Length: 213
Image (cartoon, rainbow, N blue to C red):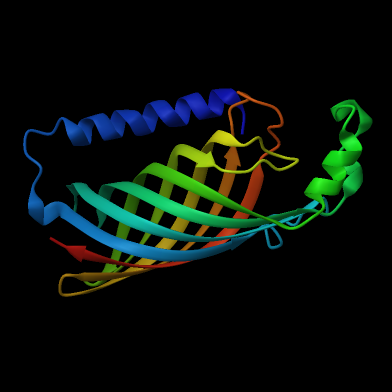
């Protein structure tokens, strides 16, 4: 994702978050809290690069606040801290070129091994929901947030980066419990703060449950 795209998305989401925080009253009945489990892989549509293999398992805390509710449409803020365990392996060793440094052969040796990476993420997003019937709805979610990873890959430097998510989901509500199924695409990169910055992509499936407070 280009730098200007990051800036626009960050400005929009931070504006929404500022509206949420500066509300005169945070109403408890508009707040939902929950958990989710998900799995993602680079080796499925719309991705599937032949250069690398990347899968991730993640666990989220989900905090959702209803901003505005109309008859069919609602607008919600989503805050999602998550812990991700990614498994990464370089498949095409020639992705690392001699121009990548005098130690490019050592880099090839390191990154062609399967490696486990831990990621700590805080995504902030805007969710738009459409109610099909009373207890059943569909939604789309766009979110972005900071991420810290504990290891580098040939595509992304260790440390600070951004996590961008575009998701489509469905929810079913039973009393005060909301069950969620979600499909998302995710891209991680570091805004060109540090090289390399090719980033990782995954298509994800997620299952979650939220409770109205």
